Amino acid sequence: MTRLCFLPALCASIAYAADTSVVSLFPSDTLTVSDPSQKTGIRVNLPLPDCSIEPSTCAEISAINQLDGFNINPRIAVTFSGPVNTDSLRAGIFFVAPSGDQIAINQVIYDPGTFTVYAKPDNVLAEDTTYSLNVSNSVLDAAGDPVGPASTTFTTLSATAWMAGARADLMNIDPAVAPTGSVNTYRLSDIRSGVWHRQTHAEPSVFQDVALPIAILQGVDRIAFASYQSPNYLNASQTIDAVPSGSDPGTGNGSNQIYFHALLPATPKPDAGYPVVIYGHGLSDSRFGGPSAVASVMASAGFAVVAINAVGHGYGVDSTVQLTLNDGSMVEIPAPGRTPPDSFGTITPPLGCIVLNGGAGLRDCLRQTTLDIMQLVRAIQSGMDLDGDGAVDLDPTRIYYVGQSLGSLYGTLLNAMEPNISAAALNVGGGSQVDITRWSPSFHSAAVLSLAIRQPSLLNAGLNYNENYVLRDQPVVVNDVAGAIPIQNYFERVEWIGMIGDPLGYAAYLAAPKNVLFLFGIGDRTVPNPTESALVRAAGMQQSTWVYRHDLARMDHPELAADPHTYLTNVLGSPAAVAIAIATQTQIAGFFASGGTMIPDPNSAGLMYFEIPATLPEILNFQ
Image 1 (cartoon, rainbow, N blue to C red):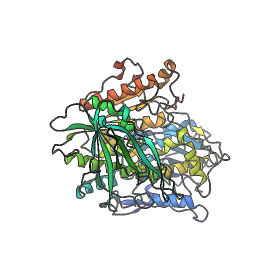
Image 2: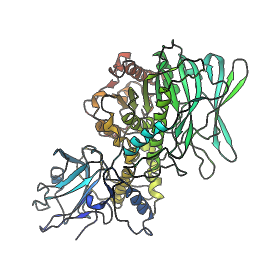
Image 3: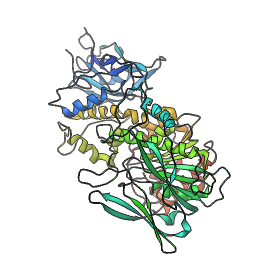
Image 4: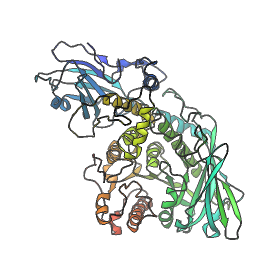
């Protein structure tokens, strides 16, 4: 008999003769078809369920069937004909790479109802590579007798192929940098006040005025507003149409005018222009938030700060910046956002950048934003004269990147694929996108909603859910929760669909000569520590990782918030929070000043809350 494993009727059948033996293994290339248009030469071909009964699963598998291989962080399913000894599973099931190296399994779950073992690889696999999945004689049945052996081969998808092709196509699109407004550069000393006149509703238009944080921009002399052209690959659904991984993505569906601003320091401008820090903001933030919070420290070190809105952010297209000058005059500068209205006309970031929107929403938000910043790099390299005085303002050879949270997610894609950024600091980033959602209290409601709106719903605990999942390096979980396995399998499908735009799919390409500084806080409740560790581990960069010991800081300063997620940008918090933010920003500025060759010790500021972790944290550490 063949039992169900990862998805209905999806596993390769294995013949057996012993009392307990292997019935099926997943993943397997038996579930693919030949496709010369794909980089791997194959395409996934999973059977569909009855789409009238399981329309959501049908849609998810249809999306998977456009991919050229299996997840690079695959959830395996090994089904047996009878009960097995769970203590024998870790030693007896493993992957083998083309090099012959064995890769252990982790996060092991055993479902006694179907005699199926589920697990993840101990480390993220390489893209477009064929591995074997093996069950050895070390796996024992309930009587202590060997079950194996059995094996199958499978090929991982090409995670970076589309992005590499789209970046190459940027050469065919002129950035066409243009100033925004008849006067686009203003000295901060000439500005009495400023507001962000952001559009919060369409048809009819409704606006909300929010004061710009001009007062915190110490050491910043001028602000310049401009725009450039970047190819648009998003369709009306805010997703990117699938193309075979072996084909050219082309130049998109026309182009977008991307608006940005630059905060220029008061320090004398070098002959080649100011070295520039591109800042990637977080979820629901904007180019006017996080970038302003770090600008003073960067300016004091001689860096200009440049920022755009990520896809789905910045509010409506009719948003503006309104500046009141010292002479009493008011100027209005276009500042179109990138947030589409919902069906009621409401405009609330981050619409169009949703984590569990069938796996494609956040994936394509990250990919499009990454390309937009790649085009910004090209614009800077072309020689930016922001104030029209005939001199270049930004040094085209000294470009750096800071990403915070979501900005570290698309920042991973960016820095893996863009060699013209000299060094990067990735703060509180993690992976996979699905694991961030499943472990974070901040995104629990989004996960509940995604399970509730599926047809059929997968909620198994009233209006909530219990997936009975497991963190790394924990004992094998024997599932006893009804409905947990379908939820786990749903999250796996979403992760698989999203992997071509997931930080874990790109992290391996952050290696030298790119210098990357990873930063995160112990007990992060928004991007939990195990996901931050997963990103560092996939990049192989633990030695360039610094953690902020928020647990120790709260012992000394109990007024600090429980969630350290915004510790980089919390310049308006308590004195302790401000000191922690400034110490972290100063470390980043020193790292960039060295060209990414030296990481300063932030404890030199007198705060003993920072360290290079001896081991990466694999538990949640919530305060």
